[in-house]
Image (cartoon, rainbow, N blue to C red; front, side):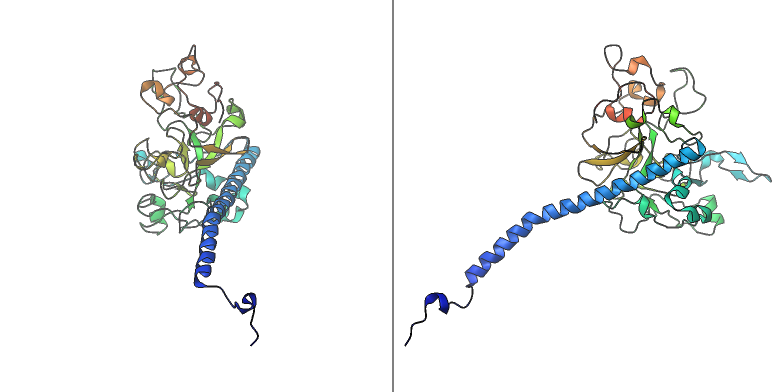
Length: 348
């Protein structure tokens, strides 16, 4: 009988060999998966930055057309003919449009701007792809328009929530008005940002330089509840239906953790600040239209008392500038949020 060579007699792999191959494939997949996830997040972050860039361009076009930036939102206490009150009693249940509505014609949403049919409507340009929000809507219990006069008049009931937005305008360092008597009195509250409610700022008001001043930034839905592009209820309030549905401040650290600081803690939680789900930081649009990724470890100093009560003093007060004459109160992050300090921003 002819003997078959061993190399020809072998017809397949042994069980041990199959297990080894499977183990090797598993190791390779486990090594490649983080790279794939990282590449996907890089693509999402890039798209998120592109959204910010488009919004920044729209803000610039708005300024070019009208010669001033849009308000963060509106608040006009007044009385209509016939005695109907509008935005009185602290604007408790008065809805007001936000800055996002004003720029709709500049992001190819002219028809929507005219129709203003915004019930639960999500617009891709206002949503960061890295955000976790599964429905594109605000929480019906935390950032709603319940009991609003317009909601009631429109017959939308108490469950009305607005389409989500992950992009907030820069209000500055705080929400409080300047303390009378601490410095020369101001005719209006100014938080030294670019977007305010009852008066508009112009490009020439950004004396620190447009490349050193924040225009827009991110806020995530998972931790910090994001906001809405429609506007606000309670336009003078700081609660969950107030100014922070459209605006943010640099009063709190970028990506303030939750916990230990509750998301809605007064002037402390991340509901009043900027945040994102990008690892290590967040995207921002500067006033020159450029997009920067700012890391979580940017220089930041918390509000620790009267000296750090940022809105209690006007810009260019030498006491708050760099040493040797000043006490260097402002951090790099807070200086980026203020448009006219007159102090160097520093590296970021």
